[in-house]
Image 1 (cartoon, rainbow, N blue to C red):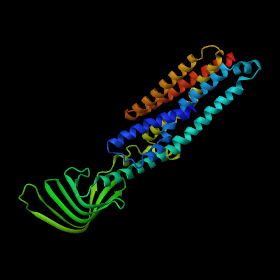
Image 2 (image 1 turned 180 degrees about the horizontal axis):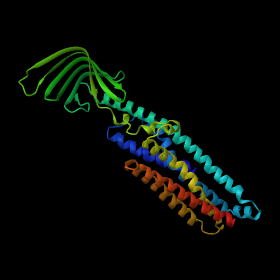
Image 3 (image 1 turned 30 degrees about the vertical axis):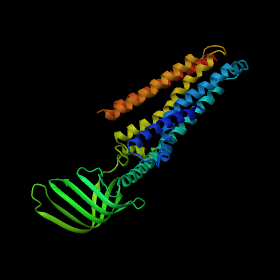
Image 4 (image 1 turned 180 degrees about the vertical axis):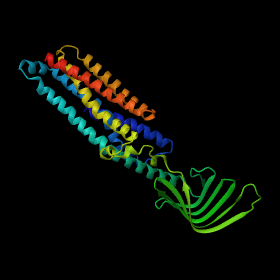
Length: 339
């Protein structure tokens, strides 16, 4: 239940972000729900460690409040039975997150990028109105069409005017359409005439070329460009990479699963309280440590991506994981001794 609530809150934040993109005329509304569902793995990775921590501590707190823990201790229940359940839960959580960040999230990211590219192309087609001049994102380029076929992504009665490189270019074509070319876009014109001349001369020398097909490159969308290709690799493919970027991506993906294992030791002190005593202190301490731990790990990973010596930053991240794990083991040993 805790995980569902946190995921719902995170998805609501993602929805607000995408609605902002929609109001800025970047993201069409037709695939909004699909993009939101594809961001579900990202929401799970962000909230699953915190959900495990809060949910487990709340459940143990209910056991303490109902005096079930007192009955367990009075009945001589060995501590390893309860520890086995909690540690096993953390390990199951960790394995699930590894599968999520290792395979599901890269697939969702790739699919989301492809969907965003398709949606951007649809928006580009719909932004071209018949009988009006439109810009296609190229400086000095204006497009006029007589008719638009949204389903076929094509036009008829095309007039194109471009100014640049000390030349004026005018193209008239019977038909045209926009094609995707490996992350970019191309305006393909059919059965037309291309006329051009230098801007510093009174229309001379004039060049006139009749063509059956003419292609013009257009700017690709930002969604189709991935500055870090390692984010689209699964863990098996990522293991084969030996560069620094792959190591950084590996450390970033394992941060959430390691959070689950390192923080599980902090839930045991909750059971040391009395049924009518205060149990908020260990909960607040554990949440504060979690927030500081997770944010510091992400900060170190971010600095490692920009540092000249990222190996040192990665060593610091590993040291941070080890430090929190040792602190959790100390809390676990304290609970074991007092049980």
